[in-house]
Image 1 (cartoon, rainbow, N blue to C red):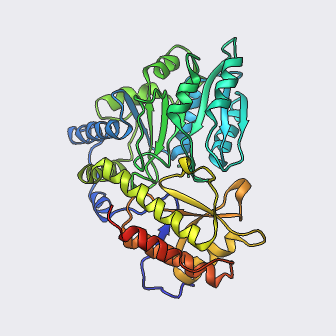
Image 2: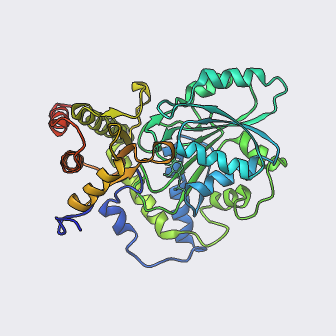
Image 3: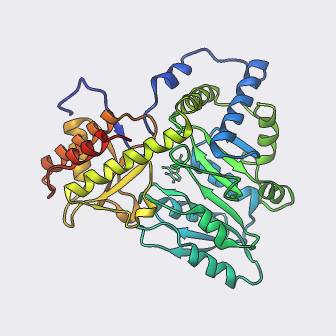
Amino acid sequence: MSEFVSGRHFLNTPGPSNIPDRVLRAMDRNGINHRGPEFGALGRSVIGQLREVFQTEGTVGIFPSSGTGAWEAALVNTLQPGDRVLISRTGQFAHLWEQMAVRFGLDVMALETDWRHGADPAAIEQVLDQDRERRIKAVFVVHSETSTSCMSDIPAVRAAMRDHPALLMVDAISSLACCEYQHDGWGVDVTIAGSQKGLMVPPGLSFTAISDRALTASRNGGGSRRSYWDWEPLVNANKTGFFPYTPAMHLLFALQEAITMMKEEGFANVFARHARYAEATRRAAKAWGLELNCLDPAAYAPGVTAIRVPDGHSADKLRNVILERFNMSLGNGLGRVEDKVFRIGHMGDLGVLSLTGALTGVEMGLRAAGIPHKAGGVQAAMAYLASPT
Ligand SMILES: Cc1ncc(COP(=O)(O)O)c(C=O)c1O
């Protein structure tokens, strides 16, 4: 039981993220006819807005699903059992995507990492170079590995692919709307995102930006058997703002409002705010004397920071103490880093005071849970955040 039952719960998981009041209010209304003109206008508006977020002139489809559904759609629309794919094992989400590919009978080649760096473009280049018969049909990369808080450099991966014809598929689930992302400019074929992270909308929508090359592959018999996850009926209906089935319309009202808010703030400012909060969080961790999970400063994630607890200590115990004593949720360590890291989510709707409040909760939790650390993390974050931008 929390000591502070009257305060608002601090949701500092790396998704679902906090939902702004304006976005909540946008859903507080009756439904509309999903085959009527008002809905068509809503659908066209959000698809147009999403194009701006993905920075694409091309196709964006919206499935009423979590991000995992869009992963599946990407596989079944472009790949057949036996097709070879290359994936960089950057963390738990890359691992889960790989497992899905294995379940679909794909021939998966995986590049190991230590879960403390992003994908290695040179290693990808080497494998593709050796693929003289061009058997590799797709390269999968997770842009922001939410489990490790390491980014992969997508333009570098694209450059490493040179003229290899494999499709580049990117999971941008925890990076989209937190930092610069250019689906077209970076030459990505399939980019997958979800509603519940940087976009500040409740869970339940996935977004897929699809290049013409990927669409052509899906149309020319490139994929597997599919029905609900078929891109074709979805993107055709989405073109006019509609869906092949009953859409999650309240989430679309929410999305429209959330992107409107981001445009009011300006995407560059939204990204700068994320970078600043991520830096403040890292400064706190360093002042506590704790190790960041991500070892490459060029790969620090904008929306989440994974922090390691000293050997012999439990990150889960720390999180439980923080939840019970201070009414705050943090992200847990996943897979290989279970109980070794805790993750502070700082994506989406967050102000300076909410962030410093969250860091204060962590510092008090470190003390209450008996985790060896130095005081002063919050001070370090405050000093940084108080300085001019
Ligand atoms: C990078 C990444 N990929 C995939 C997923 C899975 O998305 P969902 O839980 O929406 O299915 C997540 C969720 O946290 C994620 O962070």
